[in-house]
Length: 222
Image (cartoon, rainbow, N blue to C red):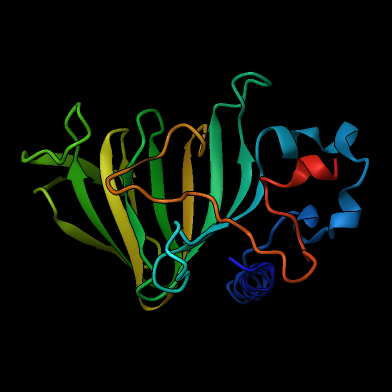
């Protein structure tokens, strides 16, 4: 992705969050210069990989296959005792987050506003293939049995809890969706298993200066 695209998408995300009255930490709008020499006071942000994260999953077509994320809080088993994570995301209309599961993480996905979030599910076998057996998830605490490949719709205020090993892909319907995630500790480097091979983090073409840092870029400044 071009840096100019990343800048544009983050600026649009800030406006979308504000429009939906979802407010980010003050450091969400730090410029790269603002981060310099702040490790002593901001180490948790870097070490626990908080902040901006967007990806086109290697598609080179962010609007069709991509996701905007901001990690608000997260634990780090090597650094602290915090056992949880919270993210806020934006799923555009028809913008797919491809099929994947987590071996360790259990997560709630919440529609916090906007359009309808459509999610397709499969359980997984030990070899990573799709299971052909029914399985269960919980929607707002209520057990729901799903068939392989079944799709559910989350309207604003609804949520679904997925245990580790459950494949899922999702996208917005009607209009962009403000998507919340509450989970056990998140590790995007080691705990994402995609059904198809994808690129989790974007390759960036530096066609202009960054307005904001991605969570993978703190080391160069802190």
